[in-house]
Length: 151
Image (cartoon, rainbow, N blue to C red; front, side, top):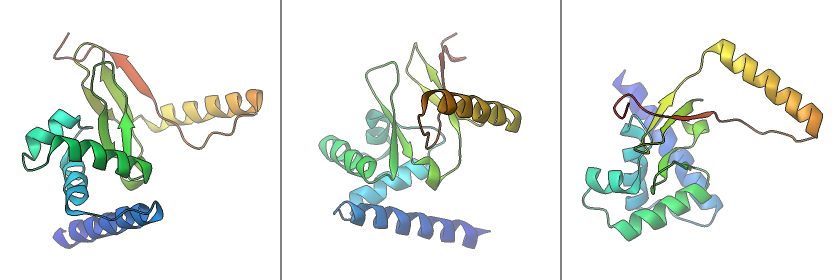
């Protein structure tokens, strides 16, 4: 099992490095550290979260490197209701999921919808596409409300 995790990790880092090369960037130590934090996290991280988890990273470097990783398509920015966006690995590098966003604290939790909900969303997306001529590439469902801690 450990070999599987190592292989997946190696494949992930290779993919991130390729995406960065595609936008003329290198996969630096700081970028690798950010990707490792995002891999280990159970939910999207804000920049303050990142700085607490790895005190060796400078705030300006985190901002800059997350912007580059986002531009390269390796990281996705989740906009929340508070002052801080959250960051996670791009969905195609992990798994398809959606978000619960707390409008009180700004916290973000991932959730996976049932197959039935995904089928219903797919039908709704097809209907919108047919009606509008819009060609969707993927979808995200963000539920905004109050988390259990804030309730």
